[in-house]
Length: 161
Image 1: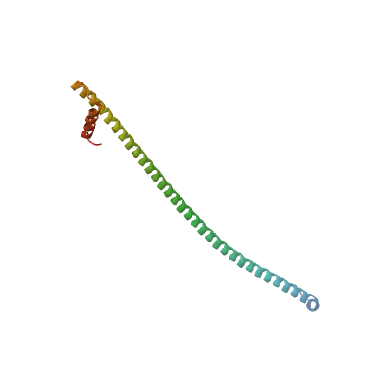
Image 2: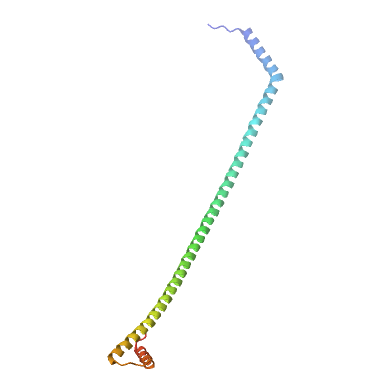
């Protein structure tokens, strides 16, 4: 069976105790100081990371606001561009209508002038033909004053326009 050696147990316990006293005197404080320093370093890193996270969230929120403002400005620019395009289109249409009305009026005036000229020429031709026909019918020579009076009477008897 198993035999316990009490002397070895005592010497092992004494050696362990002496080792604990030596470690406490010389190594325990530096080890605890190193652990405390490491703990502080980790805590500071976590605090810096949290601050960096808060800063990043703030910048992200600011960027979102800037993006929203930029979108609003873009929508405003698009709206103004559409309004300007509509205004230019309306002005162009109005100008085209005005110019077409002017051209139409000029054409009507020219047609009216040509019509009056044609009527005047036609009256002259009709009068000349009437005089020649009357001259042939009567077979007599009519003097010029009488001829003009007959033509004027004939022209006055024609319907106007």
